[in-house]
Length: 327
Ligand SMILES: [Mn+2]
Image (cartoon, rainbow, N blue to C red; front, side):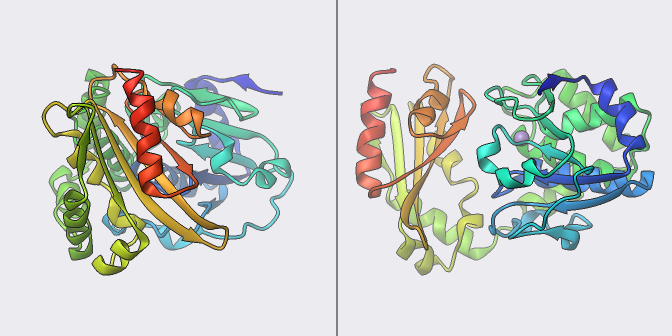
């Protein structure tokens, strides 16, 4: 059983909850972290019992470490949920990025997201692809319920907004996004402090990793496709890990004439070696989500990703063929 709900439905429901579990997708970005922290703080304020869980073991990016409550987020193996807990899942397009067994033993599973390809896996679904960030949807819920947004909750909501809009520069930057930012600034959010903490504290390994990635950069299809890859050895040489890859794809994407950017990095685990691939379409004329879907991935028209077997060069060669047919 699955049905669509609106902002006002959840605004009514949230303060009446007794016990909620808050989740987001693995490898959490600023929006995912912002969502879980904002909802956790609001649950605290409302006196709603809650626990917070993020699947996977990728550490939360240090840029977001200034948010409160991160130490309360449970990671790794998740214990069985009460059958009556409502699970709020934020910013996750499909249940494949979550542990399905978690959903089986829960009460209502509430899917709150802005990805256009969200598959509606919740028992209740609030999916709004026009929202710039999932924190914007959460903001709308809080506002509809007249729930108190203080400077701390506002900062968590703002983090999702500022990161998912590329600091209010991407095409998802609507007047609504700016209005939300204005509201939050009036609620006490220090936007310059967030900027300093998120964007002006680059760890040296991240800069070193970027250097290697730019060194590996190749242009294909007459410059329409920019591709780069990093091996496990590269990560080691830079003293870096997956957290430090954020932003590399943007350097590839912004090269003049590039229509598709592809960033491939090697991941070695107990299950073997795989390639994690991020894709960006600069003008939306090539639907990179359609390419990612071919390999079981997901995303938006302009930003998508997937995981593949094989070496980086063969993955990039495959991408080159797929992109060529779409130019
Ligand atoms: Mn998001």
